[in-house]
Image 1 (cartoon, rainbow, N blue to C red):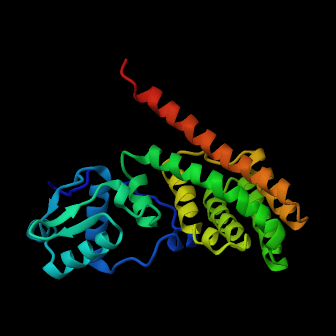
Image 2 (tube, helix red, strand yellow; image 1 turned 30 degrees about the horizontal axis):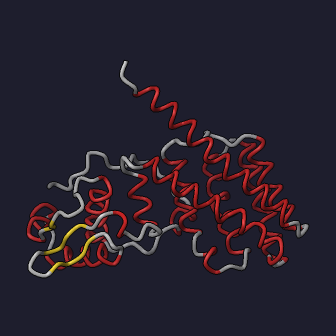
Length: 264
């Protein structure tokens, strides 16, 4: 099956420091290009679970050396997307075997026809984690972290009020990353790349308002203020509302798109 990608994601992904840090270091040159195309093809289902991948076919299609293909398959294997079977070859594994927390898989799934299902799963995970992280941050955040959270909330307010959507997204990613770190839970902290992909993906695919409304801006201020005051319940409640709003907005956009595309 061909791995050419007519459904490649649209250009124009925000080029922000947050976006750059949201994924592990990329493979160099041709390796990265081939990895992106094969990974997306698997997530799209154009290369389906159980299918055998033939290195020779990839060499011909991508016009690259066998060593490049081997490295790409090694990375996909480490991500749980493929496995080498004796006397069979390299086989594509079903999604339940994948490392679904890998930012690259998240990004590919957001670029695929499974976009809304991926966003829903990520939003539900955020609902379980970020409010608890906010509560813990109210107890554990350092004075420096509190100061930075307040500053970032203020920058978000300014960017939103000024209509600067790119700056708002950049600072929003930083705010949530710092919140997870300030929880003092090292496992929560490592989820920051996942949350960044959610925020960037929603913006990239037009699944959020062009600019945040007053409530969204105020809620981020409320989280920071509650953490400064050491008020865990208030920090948790404000963060719960932020994540709920995110889910509501995504659902609204999805319903609107579905109505537009429905047969008449």
